[in-house]
Image (cartoon, rainbow, N blue to C red; front, side, top):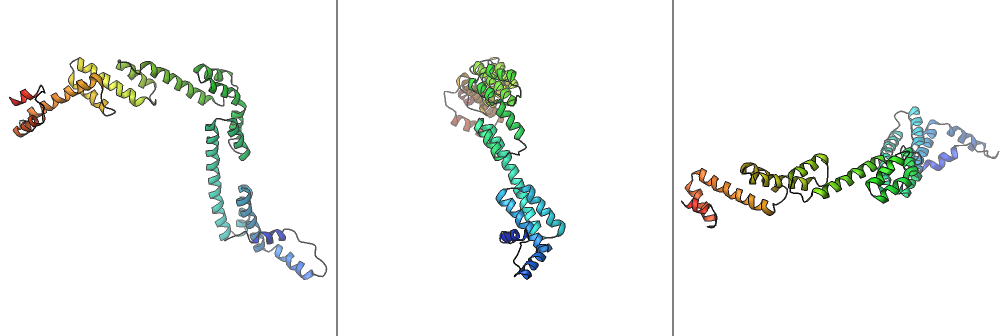
Length: 289
């Protein structure tokens, strides 16, 4: 039901007007209607709807709806408006939280100030004010973009409004520096150590690939072929092998394929193998015999 039509009528009914003596009957009728429960309910619901949709004053709108439900607990219009109010309140909360997160992520003074203008009574007001007061010192650290710059912020700030961001930035810079040191290393232990120290690193996939490939090389050269094959297979699940790892892995694959054919004891399998294997293969002659 649309409650906007009765708004003017309800507004007229708020105060009993002083009428000319020539109209006593109309004034008396208005006075009676003014205190009629139905009139009161319509007026309150109209005001509640206006507060909800035009002023976003959900608190006072809720109070008016509650007053109506005290008069008439089963009033369908009041219950419908209450349901709509609850939806608007939930949406407003979600919007407020999202805009707060956006303002923090923007990392600008203007974004934080704009949030306070839009939500002056927000539950995030105290935190936003802390960030505004601390912004100059934090911005200086961001511009420096160094570990020492962020450490200076942590030691000089009184409110530490950006403490989490500063510590995260320090961790990331250390991670990047450590990765640059080892990314071309031939030592698998360095990659294992990196993965232990930075389990959530964006370099995790590449580090795991390098670790498995280098361990495959180690075991191949140590003549532990089964272990070598195991690590090479783990590496190829991430990316194709390169360099000597590719050569070693191909040799192990060829050998395993030949052994599987021989162990099958099936002549037709052996014939198919010979048809598909180049004569230059070290296993072609053995298979032919």
